[in-house]
Amino acid sequence: MLIEKGFGTGDVVSLKLVNGDEIIARYEEETFDSIKISKPLAITLGPQGLGMIPWMFLGSKDSYTLNKNHVFAMVASKEEAAKQYMEGTTGIALQ
Image 1 (tube, rainbow, N blue to C red):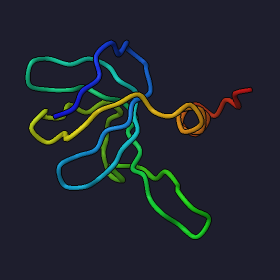
Image 2 (cartoon, rainbow, N blue to C red):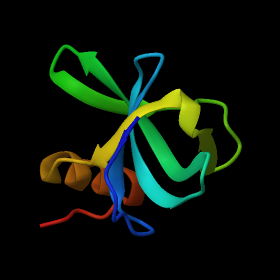
Image 3 (cartoon, rainbow, N blue to C red):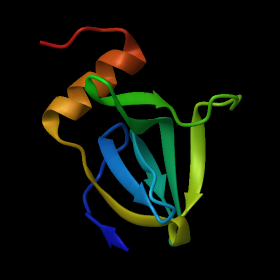
């Protein structure tokens, strides 16, 4: 598994799961065998291009712990994607 080091709590990261899903989320913490993220959104392809939709439509919480065995790669999100993600999850327009 590819994992960049040096993430801090609240950093926006992109994760590629072994099932092919790509999600963007806020990094919370990680242990030897797990990664905790919050407010994950799935990346989807729509008529206007890439979009973000809830990763768990019926989930009752904001934070999730993923087993590292299910994560193929985790990297810092591209600046524009991170900005769009933050605007979408906080409702605050970033300059």
